[in-house]
Image 1 (cartoon, rainbow, N blue to C red):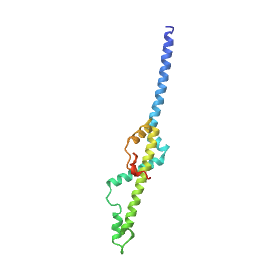
Image 2: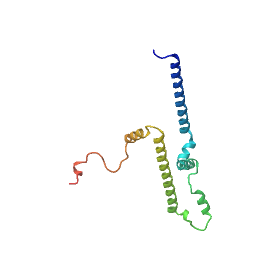
Image 3: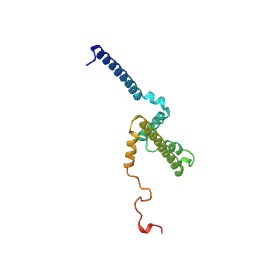
Image 4: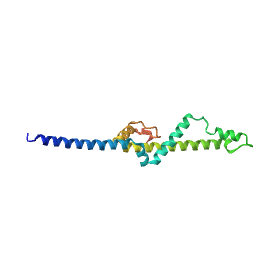
Length: 153
């Protein structure tokens, strides 16, 4: 054992300092990763979209069944048939609203997936594996062998 007591103490002290420095850096990284303000500063549009989508979702859950009900009530006292009283126009408005909601959910989902891919190591690999394991809906053609009479000859 060629080391003296003072050399061992010096080495232990250096190791403590290194561990303390590593611990402080790790603590700083954890605080940054857990701070929603940092994530907001990095991508404010994502957070605004999530807030909007959440509001639409919660409104749809807690709201009345017919989103055009107040408009119909207002139009009921008017002279004759208004544009919202016609079935086709009403259906167009409802279809457009459904398209907007679907698009917002799709964009928000894509952004959340991107965020999780960056934040969680290995997330993409597991997501792709689960997507490949999931059965695909019928797409009009069978991937299996074709019957002999369907060869087109």
